[in-house]
Image 1: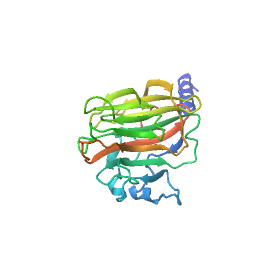
Image 2: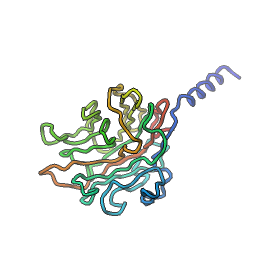
Image 3: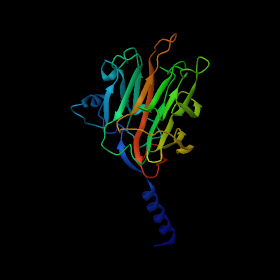
Length: 262
């Protein structure tokens, strides 16, 4: 074998070794339509998602799937999802509007060092309000999450920033402009109780923008909420809001920085 070919072969082998292993896949590739979400129930726990946190309407009101809803730079995902908050998006008698999915898996997504991946985008049409707090892709204990809009208790009346939070503390932020895909990975180490943040825009490879910080990394493996919870706020009425997600998966090992995953 020529030296140049040997080098190439070694490089390829090394890349395959360090690539992360997907332990849960939520990229919507196996969904024929959004109706597939409704086949899940507590007595019939099938598919990659638990679908129960939503309003009283049909699934079409809250989650829709289309190739148009994914990051176009993601060649692994076949389609993305549009999550909607409308006038009916109240779950279980709560005053908060919510549309969320939870991983349905027995994989160890709450153990060791894992990376939670997703891409998120908004548009000017049905834009999320800058005047209300949105909790996005959060764990039940809120040890890590994204937030958008005016956060309860802060000064002013609006906030245009998308922020990464740990235990309610902002660690990173950027203005959330329309039609810009933000690619995210939470680097969670459940053993050392730390969380780091990886980010990029569009088709750029993920980069670690916040090194791991201390956090109370508590999860039962069924409490990561893909989607959005919006807190009500007096003087700011409800309006329809859309959030776009794609490239959702969880991996262990070394992080995959390419958009869409392995």
